Length: 122
Image (cartoon, rainbow, N blue to C red; front, side):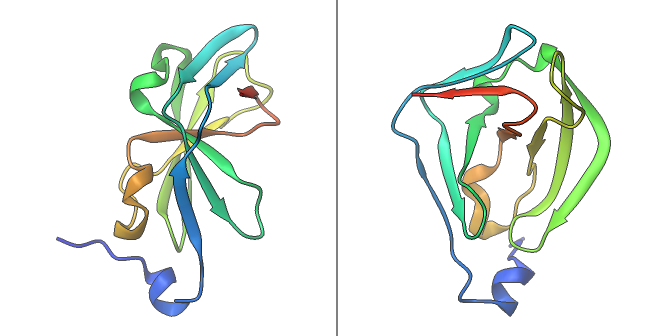
């Protein structure tokens, strides 16, 4: 069954782009590598800074614990959060496990807060 975004239906002029990020990305916390990929996606949504999404396959989930925190985006859907061992704060990674159809590219991807982990994007 389709899962269209109510946000885009109400605001069709809204633009969110998702494109391959051209370089390698490494995420670390507390001196340990949490994620490493050459397959990141860059999501751009004004007025926010671009966000890098990393495929689940390239994230070390043994360093993460899912939390009960969640938020809702009218364009992407329901976000779930994860604590990262060694991070500077809780809920350092978020995911859209069942994003709206328009944002299907970020399904099975995680994004990290740059003030809670170290993101090295080459």
